[in-house]
Image (cartoon, rainbow, N blue to C red; front, side, top):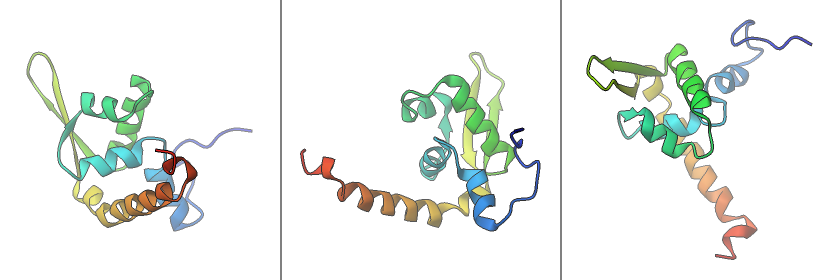
Length: 116
């Protein structure tokens, strides 16, 4: 069975569309931390423990392609690249904050937090 490429077809519903854009192992984490301001690649690699550089770049490029982040390249040696949220990406703030709060509550209810 052939796998659909990103946006090869119209999403079936709005939830599918939203999850296609912010889904992915690290996209939500990257977006959440960009709420605090501009970041560089090295900061993303510290957040994405165990992720390959290729995966980090792929997820950043998809977020850029979808209009949620912008990439600014400075003409200096060594190269300097910064990522920041676009206005559309900033619109995700209440959603990301809510997900973070829900995640905190979910973690607090798990048995592994009782053994610490």
